[in-house]
Image (cartoon, rainbow, N blue to C red; front, side, top):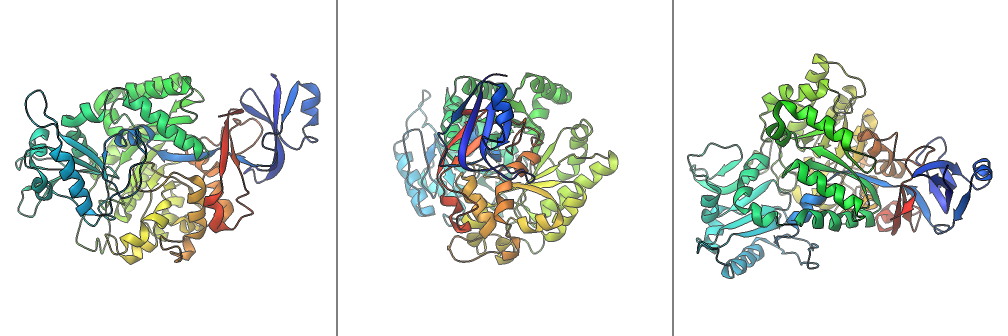
Length: 555
């Protein structure tokens, strides 16, 4: 064995329920050798060269935090566009202020249009913007509004949660659609005229074509990965996933992550989860062979994992699918680009091959459909420990939690919405009952379903902070700082912290490698200034993250 390095700490929370606390952890060759005290690990130290590292002697150590659903590369891409969102946002040039409402956004777009440059063909270059939030900024944009700003400069505005692109008439013409176009996700006014909306991945992909060169500028991917990888590291994260791998290009995205890891600019472990419609379009019947080749190419820092479908819209963009009584204002939401009745046949080959399936389902109607789908898969080809995951699981019922557990599935839940969105959507979109019960973690726990929490960073209007989401899960205090939303859906501090460590690892089928501080696992640690088990639950999100250790090396 190479030299052992022993990190001492004021306290170590291992997340191993059999041996929950320690004050020293020994590491070598990137893995954990022993956990306990300097005295308990003396048999190892007596036999091997070692050093004792007291850098964190007055700190608290936990397993490296895991966010099982992020979009670092894509998020960094959008952050380079003109910003029209409601909150402060980082960019390559610094922090940009938010815009409070739709009028402020329209004024910003008017200013940008007045300064539009002219292309080689003599026509105005498109204005590309990102960050619009229809709930916070008081209503959707549409074609007629944008035409009032300019009927000559193409305007292309992507929502903060990129489930809608808004376009004016010149942009619609560049995209190449008209009233006769038959396309899923193409929005229309009641009279059938195009309203400038491109909704969900299929239509959005089409809307990207004329602006791809400016959105996907040279070098943008590496810059995005490095920039947001640093944000994740500063939040205490050591492992995350790219939950939309292949949306632009499978090989390019993989190679950029590989290069960023190799040059030290991405201090994380990355799991690459392919977006199945793109996988099918690119590789057809050879999709499973491609995944197998990438699995062989991967290592402990970069690996392919599972496969993902998007089966309805967005919670913040209010495009998810609801059951009765539906939306407050009669909206209907939208399904993903694959018709629901096609999903069984599309998923079955992956299911039979043992590939873990991640199914995006925000609304309760989509959760019902997904549970029916999982039951059909089990009936057609029974599997144990399949860990089928419903992604987001925002609006659900206790009955759905029990059924999910009975079918052996779990949920990756965006619990940030309890604090940052739920009270807003009580009167904007979903109504008070559903909004209050956003992210039913308590129901999942009582049902015995496995679950973790995630951020979806930075494609929703929430921060990236595992400690904060643990606080939210344990307290369910809303945006007003006072109201406890659906108090029966709170979970304990311990379970909330497990949802960002070992339970997140289980959800990703990685709990044999990461998620707890146990002998043989990878030596990934998060260093905290205070103990989340000792402070008040309402103070957990404010604990300072001192740093992370990845494979036994401080990052």
